[in-house]
Image (tube, rainbow, N blue to C red; front, side, top):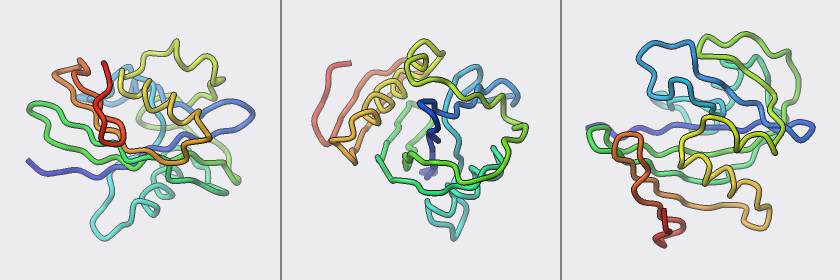
Length: 159
C-alpha cells in the first residue's frame, strides 16, 4: 500500500475554527464528520504549498500566517499509513466560497467537542489548544472507525 502525505488546517478567527462538514462527496472516508480543511500533497509539492493551495481551493481564503503544529500518523487495517501535517492558521483575505466537499462553518471553539468528530481528531484538537506545546507527534491507530492506540511523542497513551 502507498503511504499518503496530507495536510489539515484549522483556520482560526474570532474564537472560532473554520470547520468543514463533509456531506457532499460520495465514497468519502470522512462522510458526515466535521474536519478542518486540507488535502493530499501532490507530486513535487511541499506540505506548505499543499496547505496554501488546498485552503484556497476549498475555502477561497488566502492565509496570512500559519504554524506547523503537529505530525499525525494514521494507520488502519486495510488502509495503510497516512502522514498528516497539522497546521493552525489565520486568514488573510478572501470571501468564503462554496466547497464541493461539504459545508464550511465558523464554529466557536467551545462547541467543537459536540460535533461528529473522529476520536483521534478530538485528541489533536485538544493538543492544539495547548500553546505551551507548539509542536507534537501523534500516532493514531484505527480498526475500522474505532481508535485502538494513541502514541504521543513516542509514549503510549490510554485510549
